[in-house]
Figure 1 (cartoon, rainbow, N blue to C red):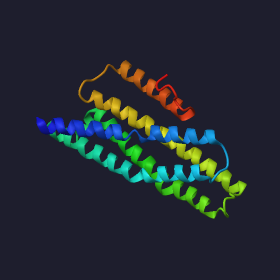
Figure 2: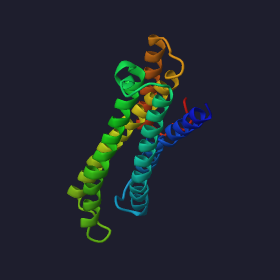
Figure 3: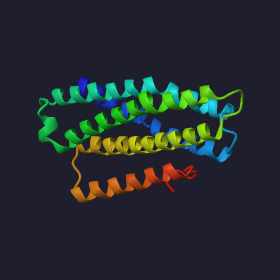
Length: 194
């Protein structure tokens, strides 16, 4: 029983640590308020922060996967529970989706952004390159918001792995999560939930 308790705490703490997409949205929304010039120290700082979080995100996702599977086995269930229990199945699918989105950012978008910054001559970034950087950053921001949505829904489903909610309540929470994600995408969420 102690092992299951430990696994639950590890699994919950890992879910909390996967909240990075929210803070990434806060950071990029703050950066947008600064305005030009593109490629200044704020940009360098932001890009370094974003890049430095990739490995920890993969580690947290792997920890969530291992601890989640261990909890399934500790409950006497097998991998078939990912198919027969819709809550566990969706949690697994969403975790895979989050890992895939992070991989798109890490292996596709971020290298392209870095290459465009590297092409800059001195402190001047050509307008064509600046437009591409802005477009790639918008795509990265959208993917981050999707990650945030899926991580929050995973947390909701994690609670339901222990005590199921009525379907209408689950739907209401998913709508609330979507609304909050949209708000975080578009604003600084200066007042938290409000």
